[in-house]
Image 1 (cartoon, rainbow, N blue to C red):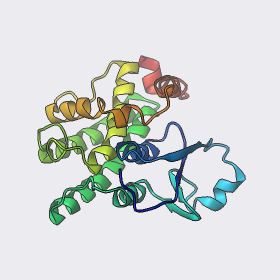
Image 2: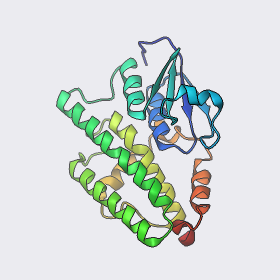
Image 3: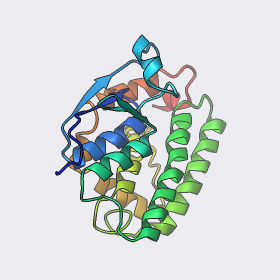
Length: 224
C-alpha cells in the first residue's frame, strides 16, 4: 500500500482491548509496517501517563506526534494509506462514521455483560445489546459487509465486538446473535478475514475465557 507518511507508526496496546483491535485491523488491512507495544493497563509504565491524555489505549505514535481515540486512529491510517476504506459518497461516508460511533456503546455493554454479577444484570445488558443489534439489522446491506461486498472502515470497527461475542458464546454456549440473520452472516464474514484473525494475540481466546471465569461472583462464570 502506498503511504503519504515516511514515519513508522507505533501502536500502544493492551491485549484484551477491542478498541485497540480496531486500529490493528486497519493497519493489517492496509499492510502498514508498524510496531506494536503492549502495556498492562492495571500497572502502566510511567511514560504512558505523559503519552496518553486520557490514560487509555489505543495510542498511535507517528514520529514525535501522538494520536488517541480508536476512530481517529482508524481514520488517520486510512487517509495516509490510499485507497480509502470509506465509501466515496459523502453522505454514505458520514452515515458510516455515525454508525461507527454507535458501535462504541456495544463494546462497552458487551464488557459489562461479561462482568455482570447476577442474572438480572446480565439480561439487562443483553436486552440493551439486542436493541442495538436490531437497529443494525435494519440498516445493514444484507451482503457480506455493512455496505455490500467491500470491506470498509466500519467493518473494522465492529469486528472486535463480534469476536468477543463469539468468545463469550464458547464459554457459556449462548448464541447472542440468535434472531439476527444479517448480524450472524456479518460476524461470520468478519471473523474469516485475515486482517481480523491476525489482529489479536494467539492467546486471546484463553485470556478472554479466563477473564470471564475469574470475575468475582460473575454470572457467566457460574453457568460456564
